[in-house]
Image 1 (cartoon, rainbow, N blue to C red):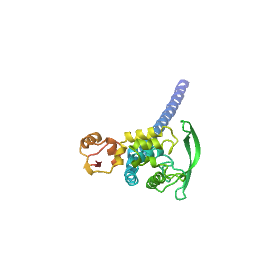
Image 2: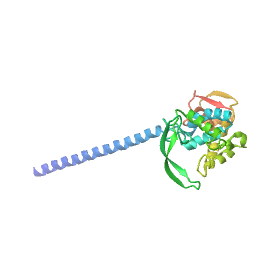
Image 3: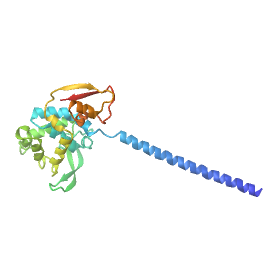
Image 4: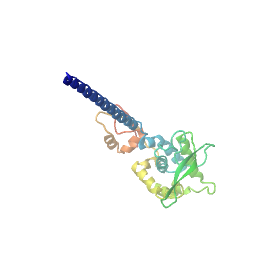
Length: 255
C-alpha cells in the first residue's frame, strides 16, 4: 500500500511538472510569435520609398525650376538629402521643412537639434530654430525664393546656381557646398543622388505622356526596356513602393 501511495504521489508530481513546463513553453511560443508579428507590422508600416517621395515633389520641382532658372534635379536631390526623403522630424507633418532652412516662415517655426560641419568634416550638435510650412509645396517655393533672392547682405548670393550662370547641375552643387551647407562633401552626395535616381530628367519639360496597362508576365524591367526609360523613373512617376505589378494596373510613362 505504501509503495502504491508513493507511486501515485510520484505520478501526480510528474504530471504537475509536465503541466507547468507545457504552460511555460506555450507562453514562450506566444511571446515569440507576438514579437515576430509586431516586427512584421513595423516593417509594413515603414515610410515611403525614395521613389515615392520623389514622385510626390518632382513635378512641383520641375515647374518651379522652369519658372525660376533653377535645376529641379538639384532641388530634388537637396530635398532627399536634407529631409531623409521626407522622413526626418523637420520634414514630417506638421513641419514640412524639406531643406533645413532656419528662421521663421509666416511667423511660424520649430526648434530642433541639428548637426553642423565646421568645414573640415568635424560635426557638432546644436539647437536651432527652423521654418515651419503648411505643405511641401510651400517649402519648395520658399527654397526657390531663397535661391532667387539671396540673403539680406547679398541678393546675388546664390546666383551661381542659376541655369543661365552654369554649364551643368554639377556647377550648382559645387557652389552649394560651403554656401548652402557646411558639409564639405555636400556636392558629392547631391551628384550621387542625381545620378542614382535619374533626376536630370526633371530639368527638362515633359515631351509626351502616356498611360499603359500592365499585362500578365509584365515586370518593371521589361516595361522600362520597352519604353527606353529607367525602372527608378517608372517608380517615381507612379509613386510605387515596390517592384511588384498586377495585371490590369495602369502606369504613367513620360518621355
